[in-house]
Image 1: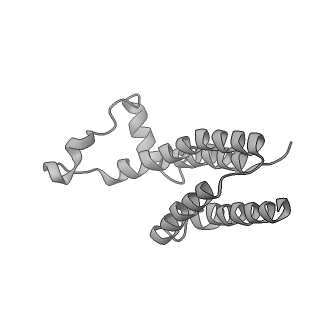
Image 2 (image 1 turned 45 degrees about the vertical axis):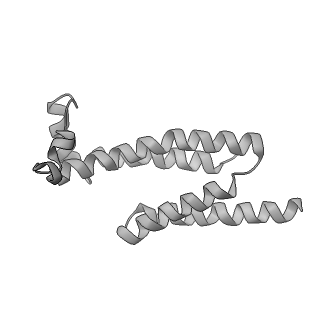
Length: 136
């Protein structure tokens, strides 16, 4: 089985929510979510300070940490499909991915964005540039 960039993204997408629900990350918040059967874990827009709400930042962070991983799974499946059918990922996608990762690295330097996703994004760019030179 060849490891493709899409499969790496799917792997990140699976690991991220698993880490999120663990006691090492947001286990406490997810125990509270489970008490509600994961229904209405937030008041949504009514929690926004703009609407005179009070945001529960721990629950907000827990949800988005978990959900970001879930969003990576279909993205990884799509990237895997593109790699298999076209042989390479479009450069525009790689640059957009790299920029998003760099924003994450800037905002949270000591994180998986820095240690896992940044090397992956740079690898994708080098891989794409190498394949472009070979085909010319």
